[in-house]
Length: 85
Image (tube, rainbow, N blue to C red):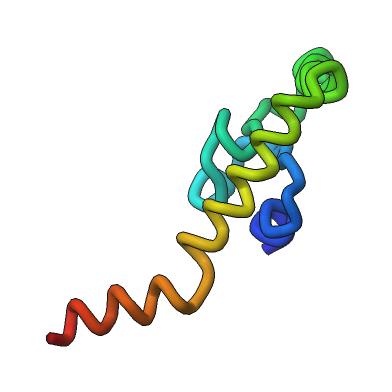
C-alpha cells in the first residue's frame, strides 16, 4: 500500500521489480520499477529525478490522477452501477 499512498500524495515512486509492484503504479509515468540489487541503477534513477523538477512534478501529478481513478471508491461505484444495470 505504501506505493499507492505515496502516489496519492503526489510523490514519484521508485520500487523494486518484485511481487505486485507493477499493478500499483504506471511504470515510467508515476514512477520507476528498477533492479534494486544494482546500486548504479538506484543512483541513476534518483539523480534523474533530482535533476529534473518538471519530470518529478508531472510524474507526481500523474500519480495522484492514477490513484484517484484506480483506487478511490467513487469510480468503482460507477463501474459497479453500470455492471449491475
